[in-house]
Image: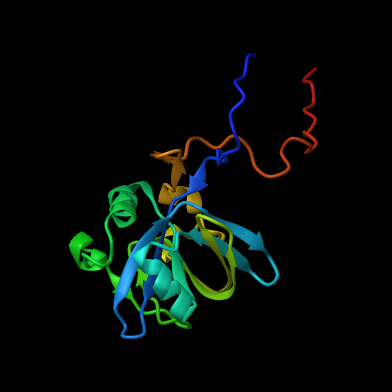
Length: 194
C-alpha cells in the first residue's frame, strides 16, 4: 500500500464532538463545541478539553474553572455545529437553538437537558500548549438520562446514537463489531450431534 508522507498534524480521528456549557460569574451561560476532548484518568475521574485562547468561552473557563461536558447525538448534530461556529458574544445559543438549561449539582455551569449524558467538571490545571490550551478537569458528577437504562440498569450509550467528528465532518457511529476482550475470549465448544 502506497502512503504519502505529510508534515506532523492532528489526524487522530474520529473524536467525540461534545458541547461544553459554562456560565460566567453573572450567571450568563454559553455553549462551545469541542472536538478535542478526552478521558485521562479513572481514579480520580478526569477528562480534558482543549480550547483556543481567542474563543469567547476561554475567558469564562479561565475565570470560573468550571464547565459541563454534554455528550452529543445525531439528533443534536445541528446544535453541535452551530455552537462551534457561532460566538456567545453575539448570540444566546440556548435560546437560539431551543435547548433546555438545567441546573447542575456542583458547578455554576448549566447542563444541556437534551444531552443524554452531562459531566460536571472542575478545572485542576491549565496547560498552555500553543494554539490550544488544555483544561484538565475532575469529573464531579455524571447525569445520565434514565430513558437509556436497560433492564440490568446499564446505561446503553449506543442507543443515544452518539455523534463523532472526523476532520470537519460529523458522523453517527456504525454497527457494533465486538466488545472489549472479544478477540481473546474462548469460544464455547459446540457438541456434534450423533
